[in-house]
Length: 267
Image (cartoon, rainbow, N blue to C red):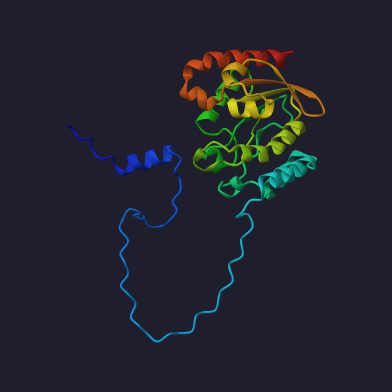
């Protein structure tokens, strides 16, 4: 049997980073498999008076999120009262109902032109987006730029956001509760931008915003109607750029979706 060489420190760090481990929890490494030494018995001494009980520390704001139904109701009320995108962003900055806020680096609100006729919505920020505070700036963001550039668009003529504005730890999938808590904010964001075309990128954003249980293979390329309460917007699901990076053979179908979008915008 030929043993593989042990990975180098650089290779290990690259593996951890790819797996979503991008922060340390302590200054020194902890060997959690080491046996715990049994402390020697304390010497017998004269009994001493028991110390007075100390009050428990006060829980800091944001350490414990409210119950999901309370958080959802609070998000709905806050989003409903936002008259502008700037006000909505400020409300989201101060919102304490979603636990993701306290594990993310910053709020990832949106990028692009709020007056654009087309709006793209993905699922949630990744590591690069969490660092820069802008959606779609990593590898998938570069591919999205190429995709919209192929039909004559860029970040000055499009508006880009996510259903979830805070990065889930380790890029994990957001829970249904987290999605429902954040849903009123993206719904209000779409209403305020008021685009002519809404493009949902990937399965999660498509199912969340278009209220369908069908997968992206069945929904992509099909036009839906998205009702803001004020008007009906044409919506088209397509593949998320991150999926296209993993499965480049589907770029041909994504190109068909982009051509359909360009045709609608031209009319």
